[in-house]
Length: 111
Image 1 (cartoon, rainbow, N blue to C red):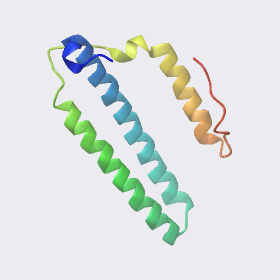
Image 2 (tube, rainbow, N blue to C red; image 1 turned 90 degrees about the horizontal axis):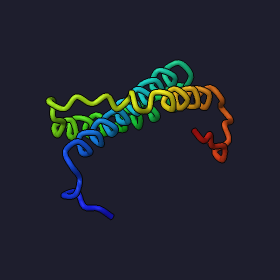
Image 3 (cartoon, rainbow, N blue to C red; image 1 turned 135 degrees about the vertical axis):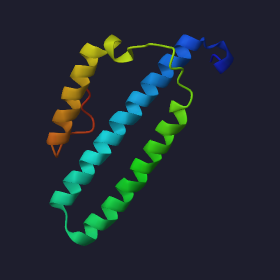
């Protein structure tokens, strides 16, 4: 295993961008789930579920804000561009998974 000291600045900034992208996607998915819960569930179930989702969203935002402090604004990286094709496939996969209520957990799509 390499240590953090062995990571160059470009790799560190790329890692930050990947982490921030992931956190942003997680927040969006949680916010979408909040909307879905508001539309579908009854009040007792809804309140409990919304409280749990709110706690998750706060944790994601806190991590995002923490890691964003380390981003060097002088580094211009387009991390998404490297993964654009596989990212599009992943988005399609996640969309299908969200729409399929009984999506088997054992099914994996290899990109």
